Image (tube, rainbow, N blue to C red):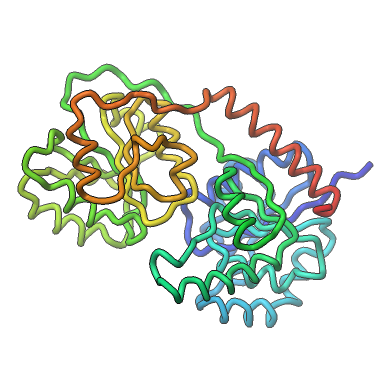
Length: 353
């Protein structure tokens, strides 16, 4: 019996956490299906080739610039080219960090092949745009219906997506790498941020909120890079009660050497799917504090979350903070993920039935 042939379309113009997870998803699916990855830029190919995937480059075809309406038009105009890419495959998975990024491919493939989307989260615009967000969410929900199935990263996101879009959902949890146990250290505990330095992460606001007299932590260690780095470095230079150190992107091994179990991870994001930084911090034994948003609720407890500056400062000032940050053991996470991958592969073989 022949194996199901699956085309994974990596619809992105940047490389971030979702793209590494898409590569991990593809690598895991290879045990069950015959899989080929199509990337939008040659520069993106290494992420997938490095894990042993068959990669082909469709330069600029899968995602171009423009808003949601532009993506719809682009998908219609390019449908013959995109359909030619996936001709001969039994199923198509469109990997996109946001719904908008997958729309062109979805428009092109809909009705030609069974098509799923690999999506980390649904970005609810209401908290940011108010009543206009409701209208935009309705449009996004229609865009989600281009797909027969949406594969997402945890049950909370699956419920959110299903509530907004009424599309069948499947959960495949993120792959969490092995984290070396941190070495013992007598250095003072630090606050740590790990991620891209952009508006979504609200790092400027975080620095403002942490720069207060009486903060028991004197240093914010910032691991990551992005378009706001220069601006944030200037802001950090004006702090009176906080020292910020910028480390840029560092390798996983370098992160393990840099961080200690008594450091505290702090995230202030506007939106997240499920931050791997939290999972890895938990495996290190680090305390985690996070802004109370949907994307972190599956990996934190209520006593670890805050809503505003006062809530954040209250958590930092706790003399005996709770230590019950919980995460599955790596072996348990791997076992559960293997089961989820097998279920997804069965669904792909059945054409999303």
